[in-house]
Image (cartoon, rainbow, N blue to C red; front, side):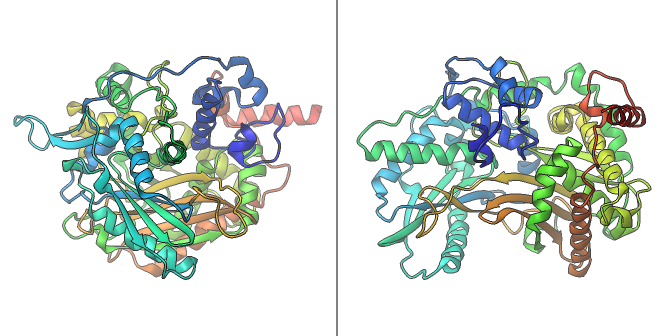
Length: 559
């Protein structure tokens, strides 16, 4: 299972999942595939026990039971409330995946398969509805108990004229945007499926979903389920999809219930201090939702060399016991310090949010929008930035410092959204504090099935995209992030930067991108003997970084 998820030929029984390049999103893939094989483990156990041998000691052999309640209201999560509560439109706010499909795809079978998937995942049957009149501006998702007619959600488009991959990709983008325009969460239209029919050649299937009902991790459930349902129906059988452990409704309800708990409200001083001083400023004025919208955003994509990416995912991750998220943020902290010539910067970090709020929760097969957004103060300190770029000792010190800054965030940031959007008392105070100018989102590592000679493997995801209404307000002056895709020549890390035109200019953003790449290159170029633990690696110990370093140096000299 480790080898399957990580795309490796073999894995030893004592090899660590994260040392081999795994991340938190991939750990959920591991949990889901293990459960499909009849082995029950949790994401928390993957982080704690890490190796096949360790997980074998705690794995259970039991059936996952689906929760019975699949209809009724679903409370909006913090990220949903933030989105629906803004001034602009959200009707076409979407994500989509492009999938390679066989030339002889059958439209009726596809409709039946999509029906099975929508019936199985209750959030896909949801409508966005206003609540009682005494709470103006308040909304919930209302899930239909009866099956939804998805016939009109499936469309065939003649794509025979698309001569090559570039033309097919362009057509997919056009059709994805058109399909997004047909979404209507208030009417319960949450999905679209568009078959790009190329006749006797392999086609493409665009699966488009409104962002209110999916996130990036949801696609790891939806696409395999759609494939399974299609093949089962094509073979003349009724599809039986794997059970869902915890419903999105249950998770959202517990989230709402915990927002006023003592444990969550105790976090308020942390968030208050985090936002009180926003650090280095980027723009001459604040965001204006009437002027600064999605239609005015510009974009830049920057590739990081394969050798750098490979070193970060393996050697550096193992040496520093860090994830790609830590390394990207460390590089960003140094890059912003160099770019702006100023100190700390507060960044809104997006997380996958799939944290089990109770011991019995199982979210490995739950579809929905779980994303969390929370502020993190990144401080490169007095780091010698030239030494960081060259891979000197300052690079290791920077990575350790930022790793600790990220790990110091309570409960992976889950509480901030609760206090900001689900607790009226704390929400008013947090709303009055400055909003970070930079947003950050690491989308994780996307493994790919080896392609056949004449194209991608059938039912393999070959592209992703999304759309927003151009009048939707921008949430940050600058949005940055990255995604790793496994290619035949090695892992491909792409940095993405989007900014509000008029608040930043392209030349300035290009300088930041160059600095970010240079800092990541420096992190990857560190000497083989660089590395070490940080205090967060030992949560039961009260130890400083200096004392920990002395212990590790002593241990090295003794061995």
